[in-house]
Amino acid sequence: MPEEPLIVLRGVNKHFGRLHVLKDIELTVGRGEVVVVIGPSGSGKSTLCRAINRLEPVESGTITVDGQPLPAEGRALAKLRADVGMVFQSFNLFAHRTVLDNVMLAPLKVRRHGKAEAERKARELLDRVGLTAQADKLPAQLSGGQQQRVAIARALAMDPKAMLFDEPTSALDPEMINEVLEVMQQLAEEGMTMVVVTHEMGFARSAADRVVFMADGEIIEDRVPEDFFTDPRTDRARDFLSKILHH
Amino acid sequence: MNVLTDNFSLYGKGLWGTVQLTLLAGALALAVGVLIAGFRVSPVKALRVFGTAWVTVLRNTPLTLLFFAVLLGLPRFGVVLPFMVFAVLALGAYTSAFICEAVRAGINTVPLGQGEAARSLGMTFTQTLSLVVLPQAARSVIPPIGSTLIALAKNSAIAGSFSVTELLGTYKPLNERGYGIVWTFVWIAVGYLIVTLTLAGVFGLLERKLGVAR
Ligand SMILES: Nc1ncnc2c1ncn2[C@@H]1O[C@H](COP(=O)(O)OP(=O)(O)OP(=O)(O)O)[C@@H](O)[C@H]1O
Ligand SMILES: [Mg+2]
Image (cartoon, rainbow over all chains, first blue to last red; front, side, top):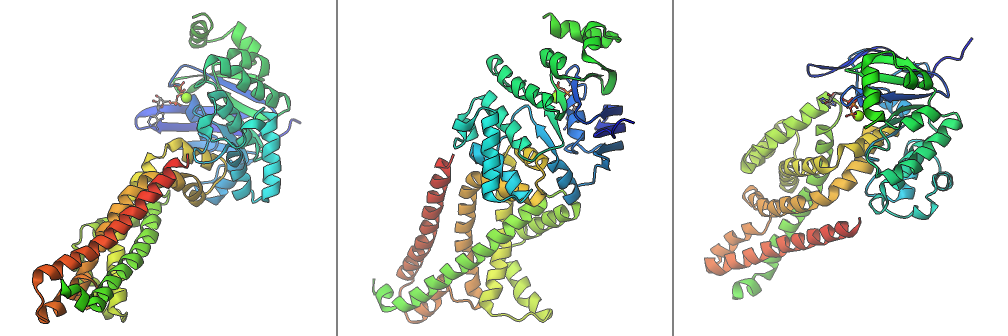
């Protein structure tokens, strides 16, 4: 008997005006599983990712995280979000706070940890992402790759059950992509449950348990990475892969 | 020239009245204005509607009419207070609508991603606003709030017509004592300048201080 999956989406639908961005989405993410979501621009990957912590509310279907259906806006939702880390394409570090404060803020205010404990943990995480020396700087003084690693540390400081990544390396200069992917790779190896929207095929091959391919708001393939890359079933996926793999 | 030196205590009392009205109504307006701005961006529809109604009504009512409404209206509900308090309520409520809109404009200058990151970490709406969004909005909100408070200092003159001691109202007794109208008003104007230039100075300082903080 397998364990209950951590994230389950059933029959999820979402429109932006007349645009149907999520069409009857079915997705299950097991504990410790790493699912990479790929697909053409506008296919609904970000919306899917953001729906999981209700940054985008959906119209129909159910989304459960750790057995609990997503609550409506309010304290219960905040509590659930505290357990699901999110990393954004544009980092979104708190611009008015130092790197250390960015990592400590939510543990202090949301988890109500003591200052000493929050700081010890924050420094430990910054050390882990290789940014001990930057603790007292403001985010704007850091490179993109450094900012994104702080953002990952900030999310990890909440001890999340799962992490959502929406194109975490897309805003980065090429030489900074690897430093972020390495941190993510390590997280994956440690057994973190992850949903990762990315076009980094190397990461998908080496870290993902499954690849989900989206097009026009639908999940049209949900496969083991090796199978998906060597033998895509749909023309849409084959077409997409040929564009991103040999340009 | 002797209109000032002869009536120093009268001028002083008037100036102090204006300063009190400005400070008390300003504090009230700031507190209420920030709160209503929070209402206007809240996820709760009822609060948004209330916030919009508050601003629409107060911003579009002539201040004198609002004074009448407060002075004549509240006693009908059994609320009897000193004129000074009525004046602070009327001025504070009126000014809060402008503060609210300045704060809301400031909130809109903060990138959406900041609030999303805060919420994704489990912060409540109030925490997101007070810990992440408002501190970043502060810098762009300082200059319009300064202007609004300067307008408040000048608007407080209306209270003089409602039996509250304030600077402009001093012209009446001075006039009765036979002093020339020109010098009377010159010294009143100087009094207002003292208040408004002080405000401008304080807010200029605040702006510079927040300016270097990042
Ligand atoms: N807030 C919004 N309001 C209206 N339309 C939106 C909104 N957000 C996204 N959309 C539209 O919904 C569709 C799906 O958007 P989404 O951001 O999920 O796509 P994506 O797969 O992440 O694309 P990309 O690779 O460009 O990030 C797009 O057509 C987009 O224009
Ligand atoms: Mg996207």
